[in-house]
Amino acid sequence: MNAFRTLDDAGPLQGKRVLLRVDLNVPMEGGRVTDATRIERIVPTIREIADKGGRVVLLAHFGRPKGKPVASESLKPVVGTLSEHLGRPVAFAEDCVGPASADAVAALKDGDVLLLENTRFHAGEEKNDRAFTEQLAANGDLYINEAFSAAHRAHASTEGLAHLLPAYAGRLMQAELDALTKGLEAPTRPVIALVGGAKVSSKIDLLQNLVAKVDMLVIGGGMANTFLHAQGKSVGKSLCEKDLADTALRIVEAAKAAKCRIILPVDAVSAAEFKANAAHETVPVDAVPESGMILDAGPASVAEINAAIDEAATLVWNGPLGAFELTPFDAATVAAARHAAERTKAGKLVSVAGGGDTVAALNHAGVGETFSYVSTAGGAFLEWLEGKELPGVEALRAKG
Image 1 (cartoon, rainbow, N blue to C red):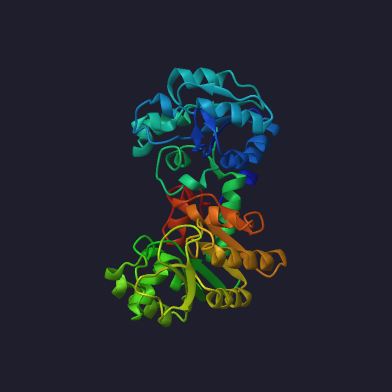
Image 2: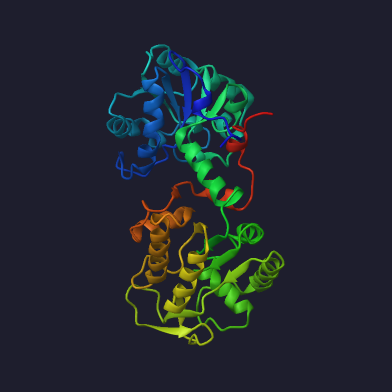
C-alpha cells in the first residue's frame, strides 16, 4: 500500500474541512433505500474523520441526471438512512457548489457531517471541468476518495479534486486497493482466475489480460460455450457467440504461450428450456443434444475446478459458472464458491471477487462474508481486471 497516499498520511484532521467522495448510488424504491450495503461500507471512514475532529463534507452522485437538476435523482432521500447507520445527524445542502454549499460548510463544527447534493446535477462533473472542480475544492482543505466504484471515471469529484487539494485514499478505497494488489499486482502464486458470465464479447480484454498474469484460468458460464464451439464441439441451442470462435482460439494460443492452463467444462447440465427446475441431464461436453442448452457445468467439471483451486494460493473470481439464478443450475457456482470459501477460511487461499453478478452469486452461495475480499464495484473492478489504469486511483499515487 506504500504506492498510495492514505488517511494515515493526512495528518491532524481537527478543524479541517474534509471533502470525502463516497458512493451513495444505492437502490431506491418509493423514496426509500432498499439496499444499504454501500452506505454500511463508508460508515467507518466517516466516523474516523468525524471522531478526529474533521468536518466531513460528503460528495456523491446518484443516477444519470445528465448535468441538470432532476428531483427524482436528488440525494436528499438518502440522508435518513445514512444518519441511521452513522448513529449521528447528517446535514444536507441543496447544491454541491455555490452559496448553498458554502453556507452549509461554514455552519459545520468539528465532528459534523454534511451531504452535498448530487454532483452530476452540474455538467462540469462528468466533463471534469476545471472551473467546476475549483468550486468543489473551495469547500475543502483536503480530499479523500472512498469511491473505488467510480474510480474508472475521470470526473471532477473522482479525479479532478485530487490535483487541487492534498488527496488520500479512504479506508474502503485502501482495502480495495490492498485486495487488488494481493489479487493480481503482487499475488502469492500460483494464481487462479475464475471468469464466468454470458458473453465472451464483453470480456475479451479481461481474458487477454488474465492469461498473461495468472497460472490457471477457469472459463465458465455461457462464455465457455463459445470456447467449446471453437474446439469443434456441438453446443446445441446454448448461448454461444459463434462469430468469436477465432478470438477464443487466439486466447487459447496466448494462454499456451504464457504457460497459463485454461480449464473448460468437461461435462454439462443440459435442458431443453431456460427455466427453474426444467427437466435436465448431465452429459459430456461433446454429447450435448441438438435441442439442449448448457445451463451449468457438471460435477466432473466442478471436481476439476476445485482441484485447481486446491493448487492455488490466490483466487480472482468474476462471474458465475452457470445460470445461478435458476435452480438447480446454480449447483456448480455454489459448489466452487463454497470450496474456495473453505480454503480461504483455512488460511490456504487469498480470494478476491467482484463484478455485478459475482456478488449476488457468492451471497447466494452463502460465502460473501468468507472470501478475503468482495468488491461491490462493478465497472471499476472489471477495468482493473482488464489491466486498465483507473483515473481516480492513479490520482492518489504517492509522488516520487
